[in-house]
Length: 632
Image 1 (cartoon, rainbow, N blue to C red):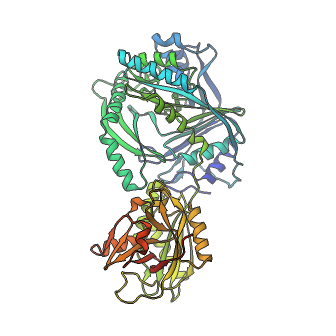
Image 2: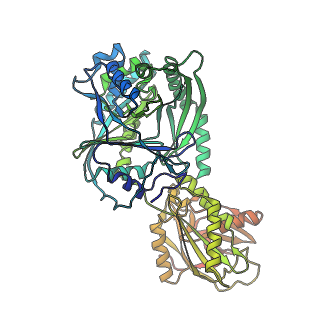
Image 3: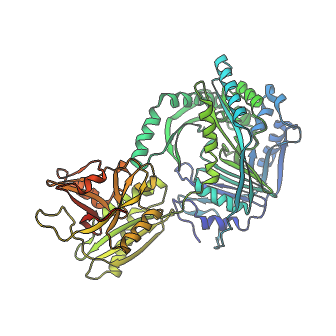
C-alpha cells in the first residue's frame, strides 16, 4: 500500500500505520495539506519520557529538554494548559495539585516522515493491509457543568468585562463520556468527521490523546517563528459558491474582525517578547479557511528570533496561546481559574515536537479527546464578549457534542455520463466541472487530467457503435471506479421542437418532502437513500420518476431528473435554492437558450396548469415530456 501525493492518508493506510505501534507513540498527522504544512510525522519507541509536574520548576524541566535536544534527540508530546501557570510568577499560586503532570515529552530518535506533496517517505516504509479495527461505542455523554451554573459564570464574565478587567474570556467546560472498544477505531472515526491540518494521536501506556485541531500554535523554522491564531467563525454554505459568499461576509464582518484583531494584537505582543527588534509583522489578516462544518478566520504573524533561543524564553513568551485565554492574558487567566471547575489539562495547551536543529511545531489542542481505561473527556468552549448571550453560548456547547455523536457519512461522488457513437462523451466538461466543484466542497482529491485520460482509455477499450450510460464513482482519495451499460438514445438533447409530442411518460408527486438546507441535495453522491428508494419504486410502477417538493411546498426536482415546464415557448425550471442538483442538462439548456429557459419558483399546481407541458430530464435520458399520474 503506497499513499498518494497531495492526498491525506486513507482510512486503510491509517489502520496499517497504527497496527504495530504498541502503546507508546506520537503520530502528528497532516490531513488538510497546504504548501507550508504537508508532512505527517510518526515517533515511536521512545528512549525515555520527560515529565513536568505542577510542583516542578518549569525552567528546570525545559533545560532538561534542551539537554536531550543537544544530544541529537527529538522530543514529542504535550503541554497542559496549566504548564503556563508555572511560567508566570503572578499565576504560580493558581497551579493544580503538586503531583499533576503538566507536560510530558517522549525522547525519540529520528521520526518517520511522510511528505504528502511528494508522496515520499524519509525512510523505507511498507504498509501492509490490515483489517480495520471494529468500531467502538460512545455512551453516557454529559457535560461537566449544568446550564444554571454555566449561565451564572457567563454573567460573571460579562461583569468583569463591564468593569474593564478583560475584553474577552475563553470559557471552557468538558464533555465527559464512556467508550468501549479500540482507541485506534475512535481515532479513525473522529478523523473522518474532521480532516484537519494539525491532527495528533498519542499513546502512553493505556492512555490515549486524540486531537483534531485546525489551529497552529507556533511553528519555528530556523530563526523564523510563526503563529496563526483562529478567531471568527461562520457556518458553511451548500456549495462552493455559497461558501465564497459566506467567506466574503465573514472576512468583512466588523464584530469578527474586532475579535480577531484583539487576539492578533495579543499574540503580536507575545511574539515581540522573544523576536528581534522590529521583526514582528502581521503577514496576513482575516484569512478565511474552510473546514467540514464551518468557515474559520485566521491571521498570521511572523518574527525573527535570536540564533540561540532558549526554550524557557520561547515558552515564557508564547504559552499558552492567547486565542484560548482571552485578553489581556494574565488577568484573563486568573478569571478562568476562578470560574472553571477544574484543570483543562492538554486541552488548549499544546501538542507537537521539538527537533535537535531548533525547529519546532505545536498545535492548539481543541477538539481533543483524552481517553483512559474507558473514561474519556473532550474540552469545549467559546469566547465570551460583552454582548454574548448565555443561552446561546450554552446551546453552542451542546451542539459541539455532535462531533462525537454524529459520524460523518461515508460516500462517493457520482457522475453519470452519456457516451454516443461518433461523438464520445456528451457534455463531458460540464460533468467534470460539477465533479470538481463537489470535490472541492467536500475536500476530495481530484486530478482532472487523469480523469480525462482514464475516461478516454475506458471508451477505447469498451465501447462499440451504440449509446452507453457511463457511471463514474470517486472516493475521498480520488480513486475512480468506472462502469457502463447500454442505454437508449436520448429523446431530446436540446429544446423540443414545436408541434405534436410523442406519448408522454408518467411521473408522480412524492409524499416525502426535502429540505432546501440539506447540503447533499446540491451534490451528486451515493448518500441519497430517499432518492434511490423512490426511484426504484417509480421504476417498478412504470413511472419515469417521482417529483419532490421542499419544506416550503415548492417543486424542486425528480429523484434522477431536473424539472421544466413549458408555456408559450418559454421553459421554466426551479432555482437551485429550492434544493436541487445542478444538473448538467439543466445547465446546458440555461446557458445555450437564455431567452427561452429561465429559473422560476414553482408550485405543484403549476405542473398541470392549462397550457403547460411538463418535462423531466437529465444528460443521459435527455428531455422527456411527462404527465402527472395519480398523486399518492
